[in-house]
Image (cartoon, rainbow, N blue to C red; front, side, top):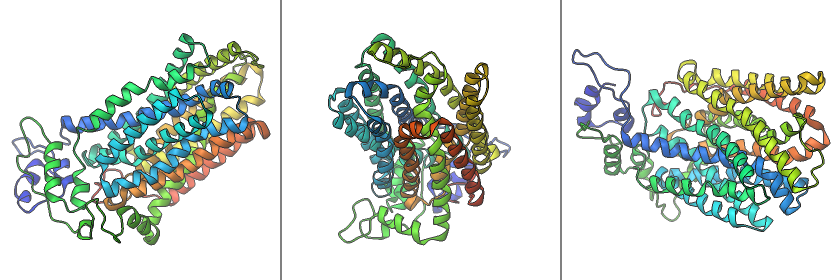
Length: 504
């Protein structure tokens, strides 16, 4: 819709917030333009959402580097390895629904701030802890905060940016997960080089404290989602928030008039303060997801492929350093001293950083293609490509020694590229688009939690399964789950490309 359409006659009777956000200017002869520049506040929201995904990639993938040092310090068994690897992911599993779903009742902005406070508290606790139970608790707490960020970061972007730009902006923010993984791995390598001791893992996590504090401060200076406010019946607050969001020079629109819509605010306590006996937005969302046929279809599409994708992505991501250290053939097989352990960890970090570059390349392709090719096609192609990459990597153990390492590298690199171009990016994007505003946080959070069941399962069992059944069997199993993910995506597809959230 053009600026004239939304800002003129239609504004007299009121429109939805997305109409103002989507409107574009016209040339004097009436020719419309395809887009309008984002306002400074829209960019601020986007960058603050990017930070959450950056910290997730940094913490989760850095754990793969820190794990051998923690294992040495606390004398961990294979069970202890699994607990450390899965603690953050288990926290994400709980946080995505338990905290992320609260954004439907208490607001996107409020939960956006609370999650970063939690992240900071547990990050500090982790760096100063000298007890293994406290380490596990702190890692779980970090996961709670990051889990809340899964739906919340998506919603603060998608409900404040133009529909035509939504896909690339959400995935652009999501790409910082890969940036965090790469820089986190690189930072871990530098810290190991500068401080070659068992205490190095604490400095790895401590490096994120000051950046996280800066992000927390920034999140106090953004408006609440106008779409959420209007859904709650808070029309005047929604108009004020939309004016703040669209503040530009010269100012346009000069006056915002939103429509009166039937909303959850018609019920007692819907503005985020439930009355006694009233049903909270989160409870209502869960019930509607179960009762409504279309909602169940959306939940299957949003959660099952994501679950299958996380089996591979987190398993491979966390244990890439360990697998590569062995594959490269230069590690000290029996690390009897701290020096040997640090040597192996440096080697693993270097190899993982090389492969993690393909995560960024893959997400760049996702950003460029998602609004052109479509979410569903990219997700299906990505799943098939992941299976191909895993197959190539598995062949590394069945060829001559000269091809052993090249095939493993090629397979992992193809996997990382295809997963970030396809399912790793598209599952996150789809989950925040296919549910209505009134329970979008609950739906997206529940999908993320179901997905993280796969991540936790893989992270916890990988150390044990690597010993029991070997690398080949694991890779073949992940190949199968990737192909199943492609089938489920195609069977339950709901294409969201180019559609406004109101339309969806």
